[in-house]
Length: 228
Image (cartoon, rainbow, N blue to C red; front, side, top):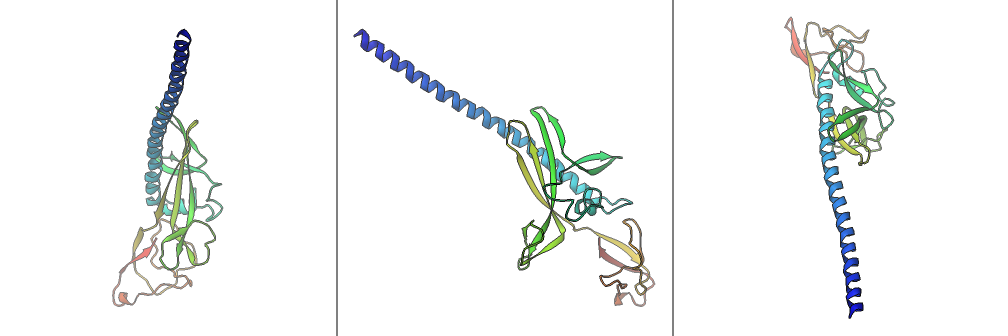
């Protein structure tokens, strides 16, 4: 009888130990999931900061470059259309002379739930010949697609020690136009590059000839909208 009681007690202790181990594992999983969820929310906010700031950057022309060029030719509007982009070129945002600037490298952001490393990359985009939808960011574009200089893909990566990396992507489109009052549509003004803040009175087309506009005949000043 005593032996039976002892055996039952040992079995009960073993079952209790197994249940305790399972409970500890479930608790660890729950705590990890809660921590991961909190980290993901923080990472999402950090990524959205980059997207909103880049929108401001693309809207702002300066004396040296148009805003879109900062994204298309990173980091300052004078980079290379291909070699300044991709996974090998990390960027972050800083305030320089009271303006948002794209800066090479990553940054560390300190929050209440830990230190996060933040960076983003920029990629060119290819559009499908048939649907005009963005098909890939692989450059050169594959057959059946064309490279769209008015679209760029930005991918933000947020990292934290002990947590998985979080990535967020958005496409940026160049849709703003600049306008200027035109006084001369007949002469050729193609001898020099026009800077971002000048107000030329003629534009050149792709062939290096002045654009014509028959609707301006008979008027001393015309108003025309040209792509930025």
